[in-house]
Length: 143
Image 1 (tube, rainbow, N blue to C red):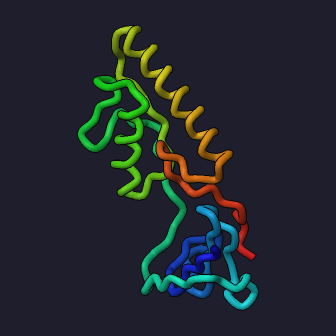
Image 2 (cartoon, one colour):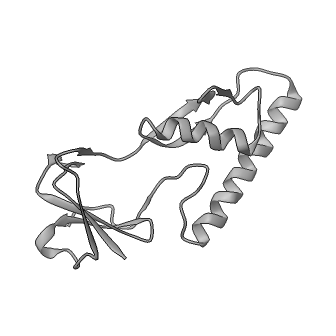
């Protein structure tokens, strides 16, 4: 099903643009550009002038949502931390540990490796990743 997002203020390479549409299909961005050139959507969503911008990438995340990665170096903690950051517009994170015992660092590395593997499995089934929940763009350049 093609979902088209209209009437938004979209951030593109050229700046803010309220004359374009964004379409998604199966949790992927499939079209960005002129509505007249877009494939016919199954459903339209009116954004009522809301802003739409790419997700942020936080390259130093010690925790979020009340969870510290040092205290809980697990995949489940990474999912909670990611969800807390996602609510604020961050779609990708680089989990970091504050200096700690080697055993904590080893558990942290193991958790991140497991989350990456889990992400690969989700990608192959064309679903959103539970850990990062970011859309993967199939049409990065505006038409």
